[in-house]
Length: 99
Image (spheres, rainbow, N blue to C red):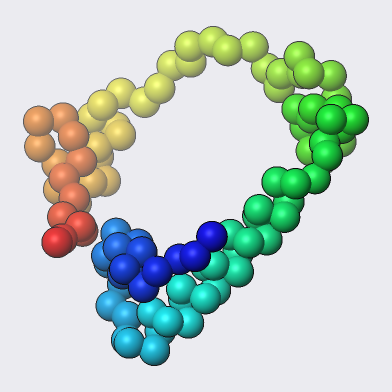
């Protein structure tokens, strides 16, 4: 797969990154190498590999840490008690995403 500089600029725009001209060329090559490696992994025969539900230790597929149940929370006023700004029962936060 060949990643174009246009693709890199599109992804950089989504991530709000300002790239220099040399960086776009280098990132295109890096991303192309990564996708090439993933394509190699895609060729592996995994038909004999058992599916895993837990990767850190052996466990049955149905293992659950605890039963799901509703738990009581904090009253709204207590939750908002230390909020620097609040309104209509919600935390107010500054806008952090700009385009």
